[in-house]
Image (cartoon, rainbow, N blue to C red; front, top):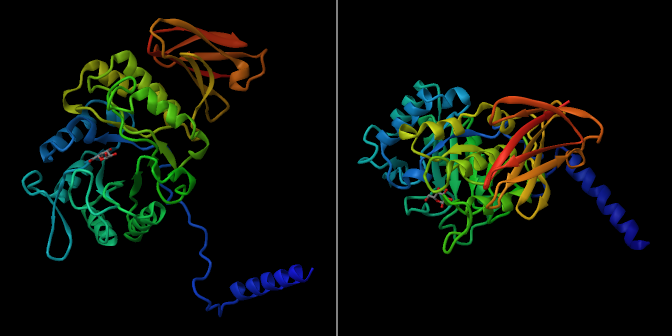
Length: 400
Ligand code: GLA
């Protein structure tokens, strides 16, 4: 009883104290952090890493921007041209980061201007630690300075890595850079890249706009010795995190490998469909300037992109699994569902999505549209079934 009275008294004094304008007791409680209002749908663009690695220069990046603008990708919604690791030179005498003068002789500002002149946006890469993953200067201790430099160059997107961070705390390191970007006054999408090490989905909703959930993807169907994160392994890791995603805060299962040559076109169609189904950022990772017609057709499938970019911003979930056969469902604005029938097996197989799995009453007849064949199928009642190729998908939109 005495304890109750005491704690009641303490609570009252806390309210009185915090509520008073003259509050002077250490750190006052902070107002809740607000989202930055960016990336209300998953970001779309291209990033240099998956195809070029460290082998980049201003010609490569300009060529990617040219191709994005001329190939139909820009018209299909791709926006950000992001230079990944290895653009950096040393810091100057004042600690300002500079570009590698051999690779980027015209400087980063000129490159950003070029990309903007194509009606595209420009992204860059840094690291929360002392060095980037490829050993270039990281932003630790220079966060506000680097953010100001990026803003002065016209950066619209920052991918922020997690190598060489020692004992740094994830949440405070990412919050520091998020604050630094906001302080510039320039809208800059903040892409956290710590491979899920800090469980960003638990705290980063109003810190970053997207966060990596896994280690680096490799261009293969599934893991093999030394390479853990094949495309399907990443799908499995990402599937668990669906309810943490939403407008302005997306789970990022890493970039697309479509067109890089390690998987078949059927498998690449699966990656594209599943990434859209999971409301993942769609960052192409191939050589845009030299892509095949098949690759371009996959990357610019507007009906699949519309699923990714749906305004409701819900990450689709696996609603059925029987061995190699899966059904995924993503609720869409207006009450429809994007449904992926996914066949991981070695043989073509028939897979059925029952209305129960999708949350529709059994009896209703629904419209079905095939998003790869681009055609309306007959209305279906109770379920929709199709023959699905090995390692492939059938992706449909189901509406009332
Ligand atoms: C990490 C990231 C990759 C890429 C490289 C660059 O591995 O996860 O996406 O940025 O660093 O060194």
